[in-house]
Image (cartoon, rainbow, N blue to C red; front, side, top):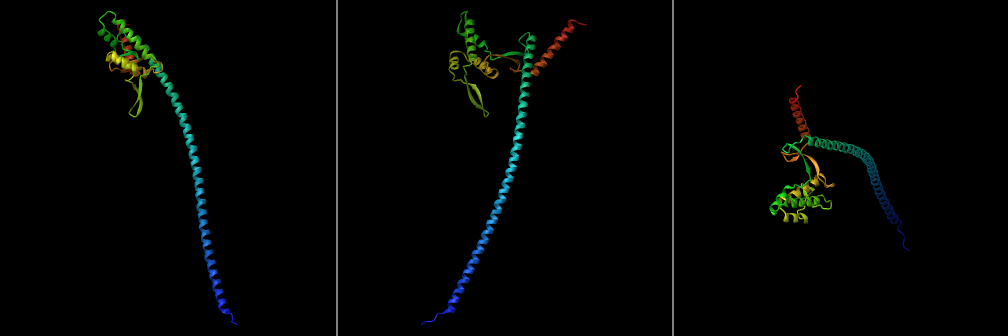
Amino acid sequence: MARCNYPKMFEDQKRLIQSLEEEIKHKNKMIMEMEQKLEQKDNLLEAALKQMQENSMQLKGKLRDLEIEIEELKAENQTLMVKERICNDELQAARKEAIKELQTMLTHHRTLFGIRKMGEINRKPFEETCLKKSCEKDWREESAKLCSLWEENVKNPHWHPFKRIKINGSLQEAIDEEDAKLKQLRNEGSEKVYEAVVNALLELNEYNPSGRFPVLELWNNKEKRKASLKEIVEYIIKQLKVIKTKSKRAFPV
């Protein structure tokens, strides 16, 4: 019967136990390292969340400040709009008074300033055209009828011979030359008649697009443009001084 080799068996078991212990130590070390990394990640995540909360609070504060600023700007803008409306109303009232005063002072048409009806059709081209086409005595009547017809067309709110075009980056209204009525007028009448109607349309579209009837405007006859209120006031004061001087000469004290 063979004998068991106990010393060798114990030695093998001892090496196995040592190997297991070393492996356990290695595993424990790995676990500790992983725990440290997880702790670091937790700390980083906690710091990031804290920073996000702080940023969120700051952002909310900035948003509140921005909302307050927007409300203040809205209130300021509303105030400015009211002031602008009041100033515009006062300016329009002043222009009406200037027109009224100027009407009493104008004795002839050859003055530097005058009053013009914006949107009114110039009848002269119609008279010249009808006179050329007809040698009969009723050319004036034909001219008046034709001009009255186009005055009614121009006043008609349902007729809008305009198109929107882009000028300097913004959409603006311009005469639609392809409009059927305008094309017919251009073909049947003269170029001056066509221009008279187009000018009236453009003026109405600028000065009274909703009402579509001529409006009175202060006018600089020399420069063929709208006169400023300052110009008219200075002109009226000058004319009043002239009248006052003439009165003193006529009735000396």
